[in-house]
Length: 83
Image: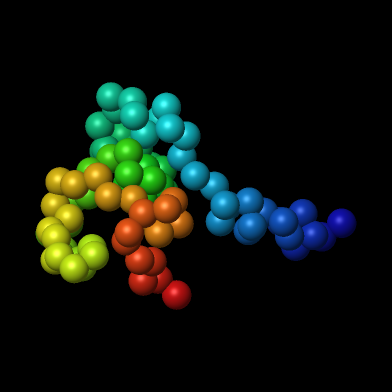
């Protein structure tokens, strides 16, 4: 058996992975979470965003700094700009 055959379905598993609600809501600081888990928590709307970008939500332009806004993948108003 080749390594490629073992890792074949793993890419899809990693793409669908999301951090658990309990991990995101825990009192652990952002610095102790992994990068993937932290970005998943932010996208799910459980942790606040740290950037100072402004986006258009509805008809208003809103700054995202310090706000908990869900991404489109989780039913929120923020679009996914990654290809």
